[in-house]
Amino acid sequence: MTTTDLEYHPYANIFPMISQPELQALARDIKENGQQVPIYLYEGKILDGRNRYAACKLAGVEPNIIDWRPEGQDSPLTWVISLNLHRRHLTPSQRAVVAVEILPIFERDALERKSLGGKHKQDFASVISGPIGQARTHAKALMGVNHRYISIVKLLKADAPDLYVKVRDGELVATEAEAVLKGRRMREANLARLSRLRDMPEDERCKLLVGDFREVLHGVPDNSVDMILTDPPYLGEYLDVWEPLSRLGERVLKPGGVLVSYSGHYWLGDVIMALKSHLSMGWVFCLRMSGGGGTRLMRHNKIATCWKPLIMVYKAPYKQPDGVFSDMIDEAGFRDKQYHEWQQGEVGVSKVMQQFTDREGLVIDPFLGGGTTAVVARDLGRRFVGCDISEEAVNLTRARLQETTPRSLP
Ligand SMILES: C[S@@+](CC[C@H](N)C(=O)[O-])C[C@H]1O[C@@H](n2cnc3c(N)ncnc32)[C@H](O)[C@@H]1O
Figure 1: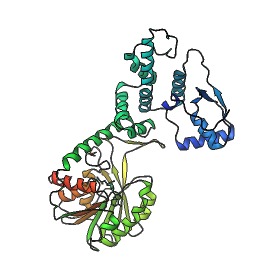
Figure 2: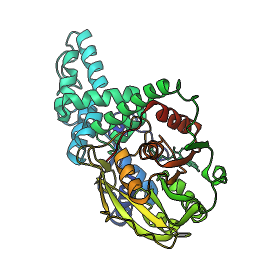
Figure 3: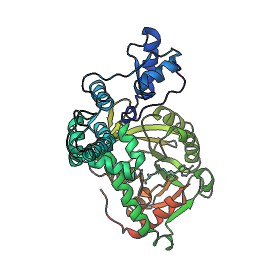
Figure 4: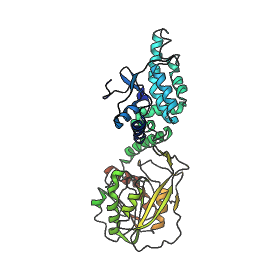
């Protein structure tokens, strides 16, 4: 039997593939111990065994492939479903995705049976009997998923395919994805409203620039800045911004001035090394985020993220702050993403800015995003310079400043 490029059967595609590390582990196992379970073909396509097939290819092992034959009353679909449900550790959200994938198949089958006047009662749906209205209940019962999760997943499938894939692959739970979608819609509505405001004149105490921070901040005088407070993107592809950020700090910060940056976890070691390249190491603060809000589940390591590192470096000599500052900054319950997908909470930004600057101090943020630092700087009476490579982000910041009035912050 030829093994080159076998197609996957649509029933098999209902279930997520295993992750890359899991696939590599399976390939190693197959290489060492052989392929224990065959790959099943139905209608010339892989009905079960996509992962084994991919792993065999990876391991350079000739796969063992056989044709699927019905046993008892199983249809190919019900066989695949029960097999995967017993074998895979799917979360309730992933089960909802599977339920949503099989719903149309059940519904089509129910319609066919209805139109055939029950002639096919012994067919594929031995587990599924009943009219179309019951298809959802059958899918739900089969997958053990509640109605709300199914509704969310259906909505994601229609309106946010990228979030749907994240739920299917276990990166987000359904309710988290729903919250992200709500945030997106709110921001879209905000953008439309804010676009009317953005041409209003700029505050002379706050300068906003469009462009790469490595190019547009040349006008900031040497030794003039009290604090750089910023939040670059955390992905590996942005690792090259951290060393120039440190170099910028070395040039523009006053002696004793600090650079505090939000960071993700994955690249923390590289980020700290880069930030230390032109400035002195200060501390790593912990911004506690969860509690009142959702947690993010990292798919491969199954870790719910409840805190974020804030790295502080400074331009020597270190200037002792007046009061004692805890390295645990609590922002739990203050989640706000209404202006920008990556928006930080004003509470955390405010606590850090107050600790390291005085009124009238000059703060800069080279990665504005939704402009949280600009708004907080205004509210705390600091002067501010910010930039973003995205014109939309700068316009959004400008409009947010126009729209909101100064508040007192904790
Ligand atoms: C994580 S977001 C900042 C979110 C912000 N802290 C907030 O509360 O809304 C990072 C921003 O950096 C911007 N950016 C990425 N590379 C840049 C660069 N080289 N120069 C300036 N801005 C950049 C992105 O456009 C994005 O808006």
